[in-house]
Length: 100
Image (cartoon, rainbow, N blue to C red):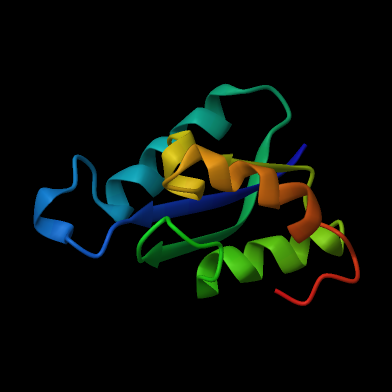
């Protein structure tokens, strides 16, 4: 399975439980532990999770729309979007004609 890694920390880096580096290392180790999972592209942002308008996330979503990977793996769900209500925006964001 082709896996894309996505990491995020909020703008207040001093109060984050895990760094971008730590998140990525843990995701890479998780992929290594899974049979037939191959971590490829990795994107990250240091930004608020309130909006989906983040450069790293937009690159990951673009690659998802192009079907360049099978799974977007995040350290915790709130790393992809800070507020769970924003999760309703994901299906629309993955549509091929979505422009970000």
